[in-house]
Length: 113
Length: 112
Image (cartoon, rainbow over all chains, first blue to last red; front, top):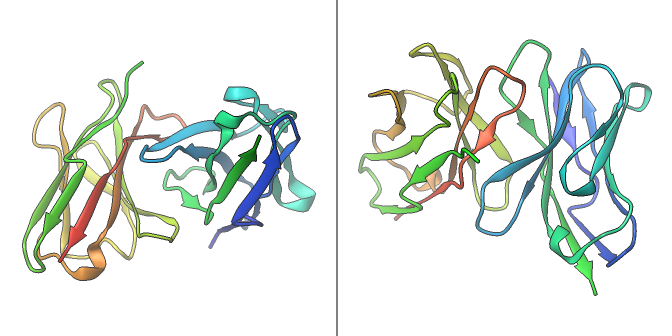
């Protein structure tokens, strides 16, 4: 069975500061990994995904994530936070060859002016 | 940009009643999904649907639940006899066979 752990249910950063949202997974095989963002009263929007190949993945809105197999991690970063980044962020995994996503519990990002 | 749409945005029902949640997936997508999120909890997978049949389902998806693609554009989730614990946000998603699902805005189901 696989699981996803997101460390920190709430993260607060200042505008312009580095954003780091943590995600660790447990899986018997290297999974596919995803980050989704949910703005208030909206659905989940795909930010980025890792399947194979380059372990540093770039996504939309300036976000990127790095797959580190040795650490079973897929942390999401953005060099400089913007007020519009305030949202809830979900890490998700699915085993290779399957499609159903297993989600983490989410991290709510606040951006202070 | 194509998007997944869901109706209604909010559904209120009495316990024991049947509800049908509707979704219009992205038009060229072949895989369809339902997920739910109980308030304050994780997003949970319910079911995936491909080629007019269920391809995978979770333990949550018991006999009270069913899915259907009644025509070429809609994808529905039926809950036969709603319980209080069915209150949640229900998300429809679709994919073209690629490795990410595209989610709709959700239907908030409130069971009284």
